[in-house]
Image (cartoon, rainbow, N blue to C red):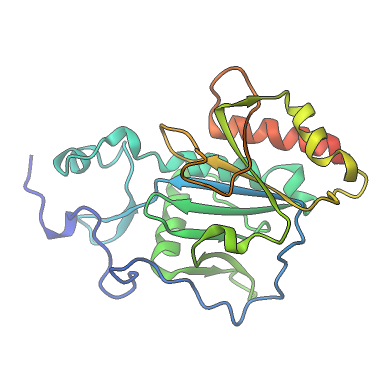
Length: 258
């Protein structure tokens, strides 16, 4: 196998457009549209997404993944099974494609394994193929903000930690895990949104669901002390995208979104 040179260094970053060594700094929001904080009754926070960039032999950048960079990961003593950026891709597609999002009731945030916090505009069109999604994530991680081609609308941006500072006042936060208290999806949606289903808003305030975007492990209250309770919506382990589809479908039914 050929020797890996400087252009193939693990975790390398571009010299001109990369975030500083201390980690990405939040993008400047001064030219963004009016803040919509508090507008969305459903907030989803995808946590621990494995999105790390690497410089290839061609000089461009890719998101590290277990299929294309197995030898590089092995050389750097990393478990290739953990590098599954496709999980975040699948989960984002499930969220953006949902009727809940199309009805304007959903807000999405995502945090990477390296503690980079991102805000996703619900109006974005997530690329359908992983290759194009990877390119989009590389652009975001290096430029910190992505805007629509013909407008000033920000579609993706890196924002400041901690996540809870971005939640509207009164937001109730729940974690989703197969180790949580088991509920039927419709029963969970009814308990959280039943009082405000006609308007699609809950008088008790928005609800945030923390969902893992990693290949192994669980969301825990120890890592997220602001979580009030852990829920499960199946007696079987589910992929993140499947859990999102079940959860969104139940909330849509409770809100009367068809």
